[in-house]
Image: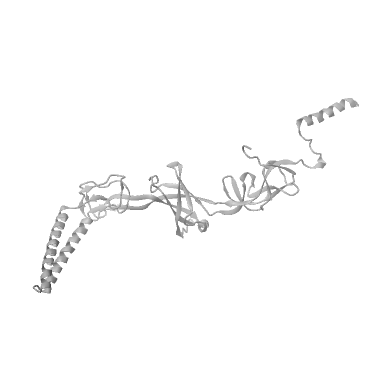
Length: 350
């Protein structure tokens, strides 16, 4: 056997290992080589659950203006989509006959009042009986009542805005003959705007007045609208097992309109829980587990139960305790009992 040829080969192998910077693989009796992993300490921290739903925008106040009497439109004082103030005159249905009747009633009342005032002094002087004065009082009051009745009828012929808001399309023109119930226009108060959405029955106890909601509309994809919960419905739908929640959103520029569909996020009260990076959770079928490092520096696979998820983190309801060393990187190389070497977490820009 040529020993001189074997020695250089062994020396060459040792030299190659030294140059590569890698340690030689352990012998079969020495167990597996340690695996480098990144770990973090498990801690309890604040967690805010978020409910997502679809909501429908509704006007703060909404009404369809209609005629109360049969009359011809004399004048229309608004345009389509106009913003109006409370009490602003919109449509005049005043007939000339009613106006003339009012003028007649006002003249009759004025005359009856003068007669009463002249005769009242005579009663004090004793030259006029009290019964005559009572008759004058009755005539005066009757004239006033007739005048007020005609004014009320005229008020029904003048349609004014009951509140400030935005008008819809004009449905009548000057000269249109309207009857009781004829639609004139719609009027909506859209600042603030109401937003109705449903949440599951199971979350009803966590929803309360004053909670913050954030909403988005497909019409304004880059914009987020914020508001507050105003009312939680008093009934649970027996079919969907959900309850309706009404929020209120400031809408000074009128961007949101009644009937719009919005996606809603509702922030529930903050609570304390354990949350870990989602990449550390191993999901196999219905089984969920993580790798932790025990006191002897070996990997231990621990079954857990996950809860809510958000922003790349997942809540752990069972299986982990505060202070456990959780493996977040290098999981694919691990098996239960594998020795590990923990590496510090790399901070971007560090």
